[in-house]
Image (cartoon, rainbow, N blue to C red):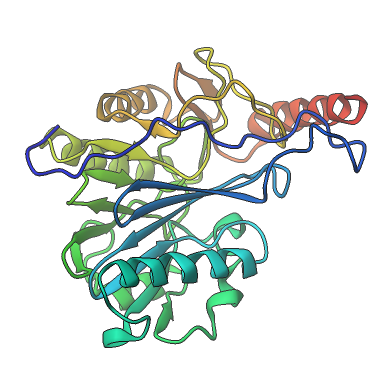
Length: 310
């Protein structure tokens, strides 16, 4: 670990859905709607339950002395997330002997990218005092963060006592961004690198983005790589079906810098080939044609039938 990094507590068992959802009072329906875990002081990771949404996205909150940054608002209506974020910020300020309104502590709500399972809770933050909800489109992201040379320019965002570097990583989605927290070494990649299915809309853009992520990793500045989902099993090359509601054998959402480098190298071998390409840690789904959609939806149908009879 690099000298000066704040260590992250990544040794946690995440909620991963209930074994059965058929009966309303089934004792196996045990997941709370979300799980909140403090990775480090001022660094909080929240997961929405698969009992609420099969997407089960991870939402990151980075707290600074002057303002805080929420990355995504999840896949469901955001009132519970809003309550949770308010509580976490209030506690953060109280621990520093500041009132909730001291210095008008600002909350910035940004998005890893514009897809619906990452912006669904935005409305709950629209009327929050001292809050900016950054629009999800490329122009919105550029305007707020001051990115003139999209996507290559790296912009430092000072939260007060911690700096987060923000830059574009299109390929999965046009407005995708990465965030690198200098204080912990955490690299957040949204839906671009995570243990699961990476849906590739633009292969050339994604390869360029992976090259730039890899270049950052190769500087030694990255401690952990985090995405927004987990869809793999603990068996190399095996993913859970699209729409899976129960994932008891999933790996950690945190990947190593070496796994990101391997993902870049793996993608280079398949970037020009539409279809589903399985590797140990990641599945690349290149394009939107039948080579991708037919097997994915067939797998999802089988999973749905299995789920109904559990």
